[in-house]
Length: 147
Image (cartoon, rainbow, N blue to C red; front, top):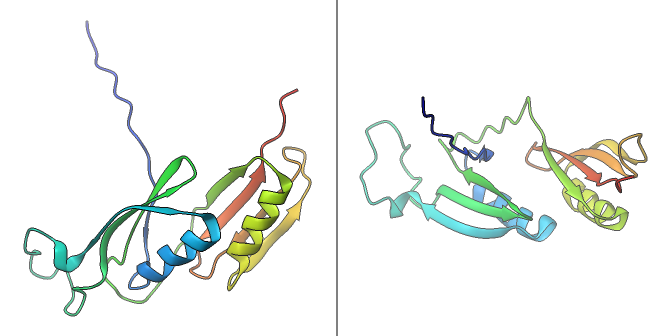
C-alpha cells in the first residue's frame, strides 16, 4: 500500500481588528520584520460576500505576510472591530545572543508589559516573556549551546 506524505506548514495568523498597519510598522522597527506581501480590501480581485467586510474598510489590510527571521507570520485587520484578543498562545523568538534577547525584549516591551523579566533559566542563559502593545505574548530565549 502506498501513502503520500505531505509536509504541512503551520504559520500563525494574527488579526489586529483595524490596527494591522500599525502592528506591521511596529514589528518592522522592533523585530526587523520584512513585509513579503500586503493586500488591502480594495485590492481584492473578487467582490466580498455580503456581510463579510464592514463598510469603510477599503484601505485596511485584508492580508499580509511578514518574514521575521526564518519564519512567516500572517496578519490582517480582520473584521475591524477594534477589539484585540490574543489569549491562549505566545509567539517564541529564539535568538543567538543575550544582547539580541535584551534588544528584542526592550523593543517589544515599548508600549507593552514585561510578564517575566529576562533571566537565566535551566533551559536558557536568557529567557523572558513580554506582552507587546497589541496584546501579543512573546517568549524570548537564547539558544543554549549544545553540550
